[in-house]
Image (tube, rainbow, N blue to C red; front, side, top):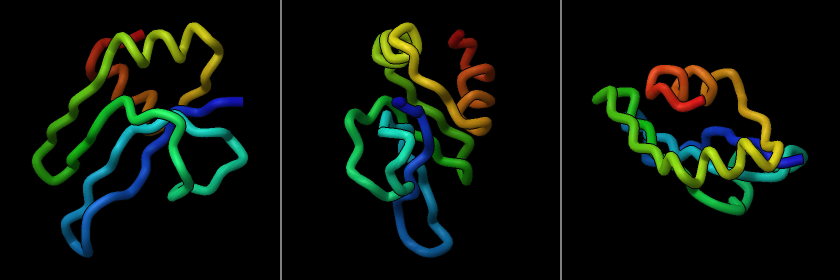
Length: 77
């Protein structure tokens, strides 16, 4: 199963996250199949590749709660 989840990126106290598609059994920092977005909680910025995300969701990918909330805020189904 494929999941859309956050991958931690950046240094201490300056964390950013990448939204990635990855196998559900892989660890958080594992190799991503595809990077589909970016989230910076410090600045409140979110950048999404909406066509890639919708394609993955239609193919049966699951999302984590945090990614689901980010997609709702961006009004992506």
